[in-house]
Image 1 (cartoon, rainbow, N blue to C red):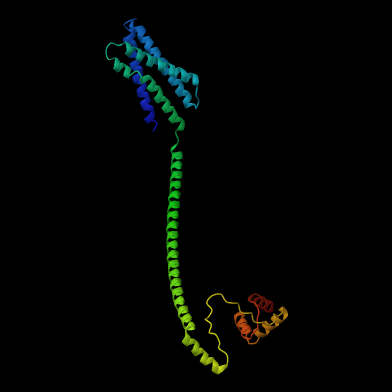
Image 2 (image 1 turned 30 degrees about the vertical axis):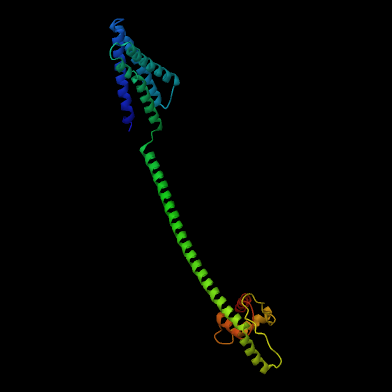
Length: 285
């Protein structure tokens, strides 16, 4: 993986250094002796390469120096400036020389990208762990989505069933109300009829002379509650215990609670289920 960033940077550096040296020798060789031009070109490339090597050493140690980085970018700008100046003064192929003037800056940028890659690179173990965490998160999200879809589908089915049941109940109630309304209408018609009144009068006179009762329709709706029947006074705990013990031992072997309770109520006695069970526990204990 490291070769994907370091090889382009190395290739771009080599091309830019060769191009810078060639341009300096060709351009200055006409004005000064070519050894001098060669020294100038090697000085630019040497300074560029020296600062790059020192930057790489600091990066390998996990360190960084802004001064060294600034010097390296200065040599890169000088190399690009030489290429731009040569392109502007060249009589032939000026556009081609100008098009390659950015190579020293591009080489520095590639080394910057490679340094960023090194600072953020992870080991295969860490990458595997990250992939596992991401896969687990995707699995959990997929399961949650499936659960939500299933719950939504079941809720939709339940609501549909409830709605349909409610509609059926409403239809039955409407039909029943219509039938009752017709029945009540028939009863009212019979009640108000003249022949019905005479028939009822002729029947009741034989039983109670001089009385003509009025035939009332049956009540349909809320009615007055029937007064509660008088109940026997509640048994005390002692009397209840004695009664439970007597019924339990009325047969051999002793009766179970269910049989005792059944005979207790069949005999006409009254007690709540809670009191009766409490008495049973006291007797059995």
